[in-house]
Length: 398
Image (tube, rainbow, N blue to C red; front, side, top):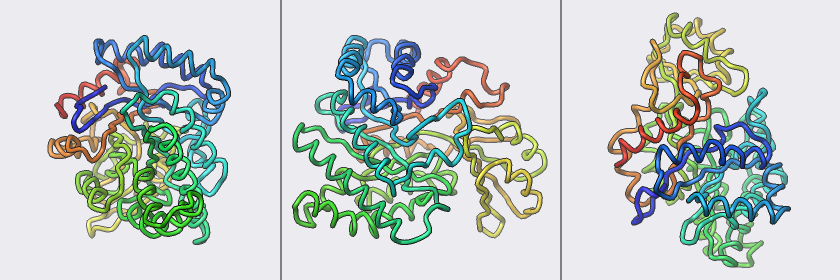
């Protein structure tokens, strides 16, 4: 939905909440779920869509003009407009263990590069005139998979190829599409400083040189293209997982000239570290997604685990942890669950005021865990829950 026109600001929710690997499944979720959300949230307005396209779904759309036409007609009839795409999960995202496989194939591979280009091709058919489009993606790779500097150079070159592709789309169609790397716990890029460093050390060096080679342009022009078409997808849950301040992170990207492609509004679990909260966290240790855990000690150092079950086995050996944070995208409207709390309180009035200043035009509610929440916290159907997420955001940004 359009929150404001000048500067533009759009809000949606990510359709990755609805299970679906194929475009037929994705389209059914739009017809059956997203439409219901629209009727509750914005019945008389144009309603933004945050598409989630797997490689299989993107391939189906790219090779079938009839599917594109069917979707375009439906969007126009029901006042729907896609303005952002989640290009993070390449394959399945529901109905089976995902864990670290969600990062594969990573940005070292041609598969990730080509999949992202294909998403961009599909996007050109859906993106409304005068609206820029964002694609969010893996923050390069899972950190344990990167073993040499050449891996980073290869990643930068593959990202540069996509930048050149998006620049060509802009030249041909006038449509501006940008790619946002989404820092996430235990990935090659997980913190704000790591994103800034990767952008400066690799995207603005090897990446710029590769764009200049592909586009047959000067390095200064290539850098302009990198800054226009490549940036960051700032997920507020992931920022909180690093014990970073979300407003400071946002302003850091602005000051560094790194495009904020999209802000994903989301929240992590937070709690003190004691036997009561360890027991409460056991019901969140589900088998589908990675739920990384970070602990802050009294001395200010951090302790980390790749997944919640591992953390619960070992955490008793770390008595000096003051606070735990768990990568579990709890609903924004969920302030507390017994002894557990949410990081949604980090999304302050000042942060929401900052979002209106024009440095980012895309906001996306990124709560996808309703189907794996403990039963006592999941009392509404998914449509009602998403509508409550919208209400929470709109009450704070308007």
